[in-house]
Image 1 (tube, rainbow, N blue to C red):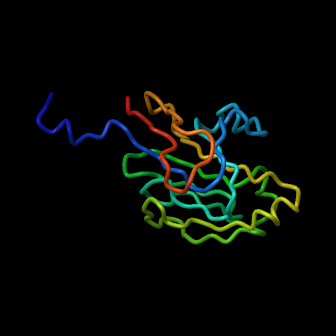
Image 2: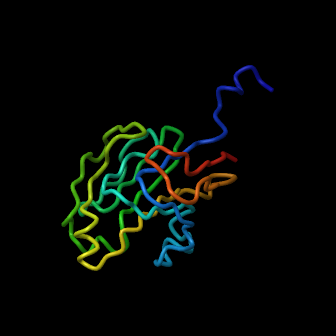
Length: 161
């Protein structure tokens, strides 16, 4: 073991971006997420409409509709928080984005607020997938938690190859 090996993090931890019930990604009613086409991850059935950064990083993707935000961590992990299914159809209605593209964020930074009740009234599922879009770059992407979660609870551990 080299002198500085301890400085090279092998694991990257991602934390719950919202309060609610954590479910396996395979239970999401959209095959793009359930079949892990965009990457491995988990989903939360949110109980509150506030969504926070699950890790330190930079906002690298900010959809104009406000329903999804991509963050890249300093380690190069690409993560996506996608609020609801097909909510892009709302064209930004019921979403209030609190960050800008290229903004540096820290774990726990408020990313966006969503009016979950109005989104549901409009006929959309508010389940929120959190994905590691570059999952193939990691030896493992393990989802740590099922059941109720609070913002900041450990959710996903990614182990570098």
